[in-house]
Amino acid sequence: MTASGGLSLISPVDCAKDRRFVADYLSETASSVAGFAADAAAQDLMFAMSGAIAGAMRDGRKLLIAGNGGSAADAQHIAGEFISRLMYDRAPLPAIALTTDTSSITATGNDYGYEHVFERQVLGLGQPGDVFLAISTSGNSPNVLRALEAARGRGLTTLGFSGAGGGKMRASTDLLLAAPSDRTPIIQQIHIIAAHVICALVERALCPPPNAS
Image 1 (cartoon, rainbow, N blue to C red):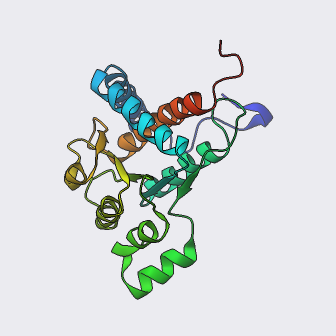
Image 2: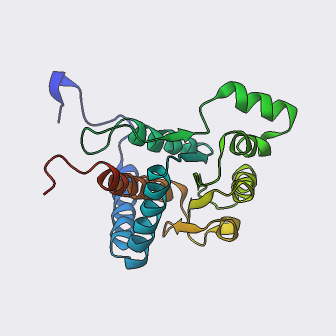
């Protein structure tokens, strides 16, 4: 079999084990997403999180987001959806990923330690009434936990995305959405689905669709 341009779709390393891995991974993903979609409590959490964010933004406040590794990329992804658009054209919504300022991150890491890189940004940028969304697949990332405590001390609403169980984040968040998996890639896939739902709900609340009756 070939793709357009004559590129073969069969890899030199293609074998039965690789095909089984792909099939198993896709099956696990589909099963986890189906379980998440059927979870009424998870839907309630997404409504509650979107309500907290929309309420803060309606009052002139903002959303701060942080995470490590793939979750850092998710923080930037989510902030981009708010600032730009998700489902349709509308006004920008105030969201900041705390994972993008390399000077602040490296200066803080060098001067104080990596566990403080988000905490100090929350202390410097966060205002009472803002919302902080912390993302950690384990729920135990030290820099995320420190940032959550800083956010609570500053009077921010604290939201969390984690994996099954929630880890230590459960005690530091007002609302915690725990993806029903203990595998990092699956957790991250569910996190971005949840983020899209939440962003879409905030978008609809603050900037109703053009065709809304």
